[in-house]
Image (cartoon, rainbow, N blue to C red; front, side, top):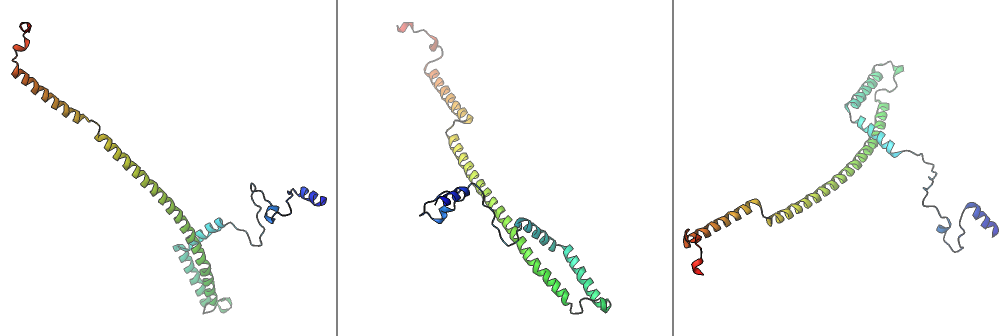
Length: 199
């Protein structure tokens, strides 16, 4: 037992009770990244491969590619028809040309699909960002609408300059009417008399 304990101490392992599970025996530190697993497959950068496939797909969709392809096929056919027989490498049914074009098409189709998938991923991310932006804009618009409605309700209770002016005009007319009535009841000369005789 002492020998096992010494080996565990040297290896830096904790001693685990004999009833513990296999998971707890092989504890890994979670603050350290895992070491990459060894694999027999070749390693590649998917992002770099995706960018390359997009560049190839963009080139395959241009008039330059069509012109180059047309020129190569024309030169191939003319060479294998008009050249001396010992220099011809693909006779009339042009089987080698057919094989080359099939091979090119078999590689072009997956590359184009790969580029389309990457574009679809980008479009999905852009669509998601646009959707979130629209949601924020709608929320902001609703907030501003509520605030404007609250301001309108608040302004309905506030005295405006025109309302105060109209109220003052009404009061002025009322006072003028009251003064005219007083002048009618009390003539102007009687209003300045002293009231000594009433005492």
